[in-house]
Length: 136
Image 1: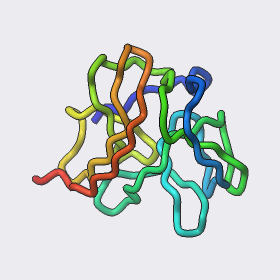
Image 2: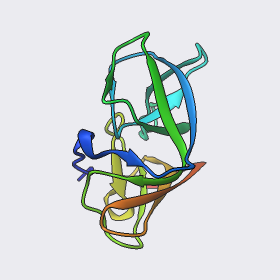
Image 3: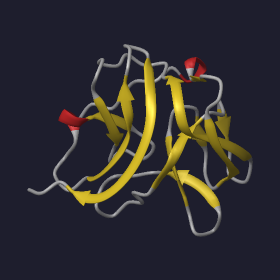
């Protein structure tokens, strides 16, 4: 299915956004969806049945290697650096760190809402980890 194609240098949070800072557990780039592991580090979220589905936020750092500080945005409006569909809901993908629209979710994906588009470039983060799996 089709994940958003994100220009990492165009990821820009609006003022007043909420965030979470931690160390990365692997290489993470701006615009990727992350989860907080029990080791206290951030990793790429994965919506398939076997992946980690509890989303924490979207990475803001251009790139962070394992054990480097990283900031993830947890709420507010984000210029996505991708072409969005106005009024569409976007979810964590089964591609680690990916984001995709509702229509592109796969059977077996666990639905974790990331947010909704208010313009063709802005996503309002409204993270909701439903733990609901799309049935076959």
